[in-house]
Image (cartoon, rainbow over all chains, first blue to last red; front, side, top):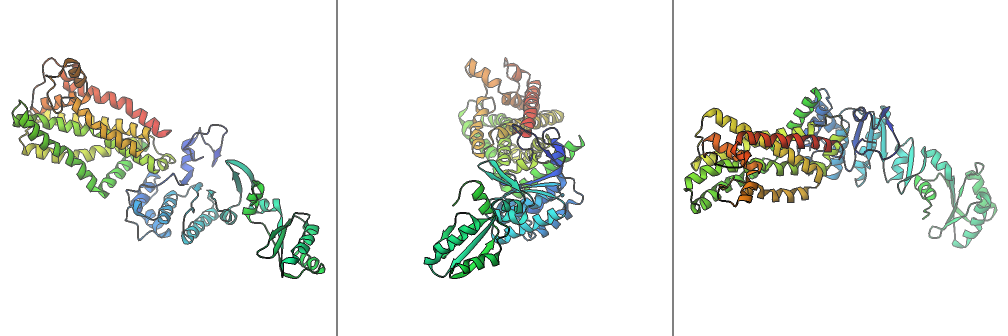
Length: 260
Length: 258
């Protein structure tokens, strides 16, 4: 979809342009940052930004370079060779280079993999700003909580095939909420499990270390007060009860049939 | 065309900036031919039947051409490095003129070569080499040399885009060292067995070396040689033109879809 490889089947339109027949128009609309698409290590960060700004015919390439260096916290390292940058700096420079002119569609291939939390947040903030300004971002990630925070639409891939698509809420709705009870002593777990079984109809999952048992529910009438009342009525020595939405990790594991 | 000019000039700027950022590499690259001039010139020059001073005069054009032929190596290494490190992929996701990247590299290389050949010429002058022919002929010789360098870089870029690996490019580049050995760059081919002489004289290096010796007035065109050496100027132009005409379009195509 970045025009690097020819599709072996099917077709796609990027920003309204056919991927194969209008490849140049596609290239005019996109920015790409990924593990295999990089900057020139023999140039400094500033030189890279100027080079790509010139190639994109950005007016005032030097000012644009300075502006992006500042925005991505690279001003101090601006005149060092990019090959000497740390992983996080390199990734920020890659992203900055893709943004020398605002692309209609931006491809980010695992932009936060292997980064420290501060760099990760920096990149996530940049993505939020971009999408708020109207850029479509196609981001691949292994961190599903990142997808949850950033994405409007998610495509879950399992072994190279599309497992499911939808918004985070839609995907989570597929497997329902997770009702959980934590009890005072281990012997009370079967009693709590029986209540959950009756309320949800789903098989309870035990976490013996935490004295917890839980089950997935799609029943909209199962509220937290009702859960607590039912458990209390069954004389369960309840310490904690919760009803929480599933994480995308839960969704992924369930949909791909790899329950852990 | 304006796209090609704009992108091409920007790419030339990129390559020159890279050289400026690591000037050590460019300097090191020039050590080799200078060393060879001194080593061959005095070691071989003392052992050959030809008088040493005359041999050194004979050797300088050969080394100029052998150095120009090194364009295969540097062209290949740079193209393979760009491909391997991913910056080529970034260029390929951009709306650039497809010829800009290979052409930019080849033109920048010409600039670097033109400057980088100065030390060899200076050392050549110091050991007795002189331009003995008329000035216009010498200018023509430089033109032929640059044309050949451009052709060799083009061959190298194509090979670099095909191999895509710095290691492979390094290995292939090292073995390209033998190309001038099978030509008249370091020795006269007159005494070689017939088949080997024919092979050496059809080596593009031989035609250009003969042309340079002739135009600089260092040595005459040898009698009864193969066509490219017997007509060295036409032979050099023909070789360079053919190499560029074949390799440049292929390199552009390969860049577009590797």
